Image 1 (cartoon, rainbow over the protein chains, first blue to last red):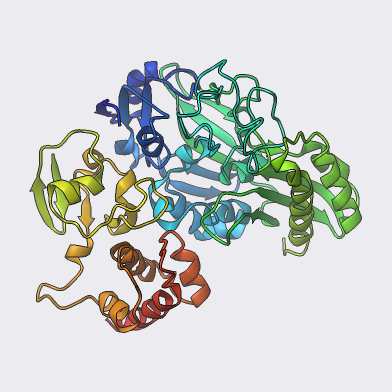
Image 2 (tube, rainbow over the protein chains, first blue to last red):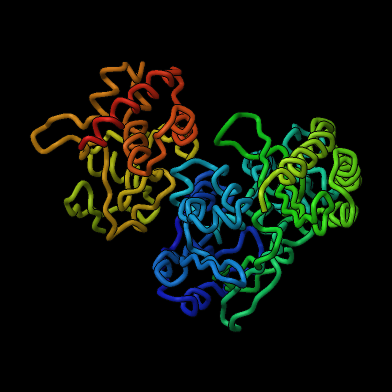
Length: 336
Length: 154
């Protein structure tokens, strides 16, 4: 691991002061914030990330890890641990998709370490990104190309990709957050602001700039609005082994039903896309219709219609459709 | 820096890059926690930080000053008597080569404390962060069930 300076931050203001060098969403910014460290330290050991300064924000934990459930929704501090949120009784009862997306992610040890803020910012598991001996990676080295296009790309994304990068967004929580219409609270030198979670990750184009965070900005909390769909929600994760594995396809589904008829469906897809993905066209196609195998399949065809495959991942659109259909039909049977 | 290990403050002078795992093994000569993958995928380095199981290979030593770290060396009683989990792993042959065992045991103790060792399926799910390349998994499940009963009896 390369040498770095280690600092601690006592509050958001001092963190963002250190973090002026933290870039604007660049993956390789010279200053990086250290929370759980489960992605950052890993990628520093692999020599993928080479920060000159780490700003340890764990002293902020006391003020930014609360879990509040109220009539307007859920608010979770960004430094809450994955394990704490996954086991929270009210989150489990009222936002099951969110709890499940955390429970099914990583391992118990990692869930005790990793924070929600760090979780949504975790880097792709693209093997070419994670191995600097591959010189072609636009995410690591802008303009160098993408080794995955012609490489072993079985796990790579099929939605939202372009010729610059087909890396998969690896997270589970982000899929639930986007389906539930979450918002992100941000803090930084320029003051506090709030953005939709759907605007946190940039679309394809500049793979080395992943987020819309401003220089030195920190995620301070997540808000998930209450709604008639949150209780009837679930997260379905399909992976190569039964536990402790990233998704090859996943779906977060939340339904507001009037008997058999869909008042509103909210659908997020994971393991398939370049960034947390909301299947809005599929949601629209279900609105006002009875939820049956046929309408679910039609919605899933809509959701995957823009898929672009690159050889090894040609199985993903079909797996994605089946995952989404199974998630929809399972959510329908839940009690609201 | 000062690290609180198994109830005692330990002073050490190490590079800021040092992982908690390397601090334990290379500087404090507590070689119970093992370096398997060194990238958070195998669980062999599992220790308890403030009572919760975490991975010492992905933890910077400098960042856990002031927190209570417990390793496999601190698990046995003051009289040297084995912890029920250690005894259960012996009773059920919960290992072959033994390399993953300290991590398995630290993880298993936490698994019982968390209340995630109620069924075989729960044990398998909540021990999935600890890999055993010898494949001693059935015996590990049996060991955890036995230790759970004795730990619950106190």
